[in-house]
Length: 227
Ligand code: SAM
Image (cartoon, rainbow, N blue to C red; front, side, top):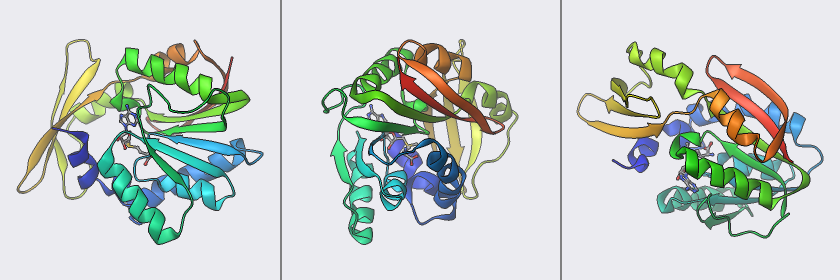
């Protein structure tokens, strides 16, 4: 099953006007403002439907947004039209960025690690360091799925319409298949399991960490600069 179904079902990622999406923006906006000075050119990497691109545009940044999913980009472009936004939405792969070296003051990468296997994330980080200007900032937000796994396995409900009915990690817990169930539907998605330590070890190859903070029990906000 593709991620598209997951994103269609969970408004926190697909509807910028939903309370769930707004809640994510409300949590991150003060942190972005604090760490993104001065204004400059931003790449919203794996932008999804673009909520964070629009936020940064409204705050005075010059934003380019990239995602590999046509259906997410289609939604993003619809929202952009509604909002009369000038954000440029580009279809592309985070592992092979269609941008020159030293193009951006900032790259933001929000809530997207679960899509990438270790070798893939290595290339994404390398590409990110390449397109950032010297002294630029890489802003990373992620859920520590390794920490969250026991909680998920204890059967706690997420969402209102759908709940988690099965959690099936592979023996090494590198990936986990999660089954979502509603009254009349169910689907399964495989996520890559990233823990904070693994993320930091990989990031160390290309970046120096400037800041790290825990947003809530299992989520981190981190700022890096290219080495
Ligand atoms: N950053 C956005 C946000 O916070 O709303 C979107 C997050 S969404 C959870 C993850 C996004 O990563 C999806 O839109 C998906 O299409 C995108 N994605 C997955 N693999 C990708 C890749 N290889 N290159 C670019 N985008 C990718």
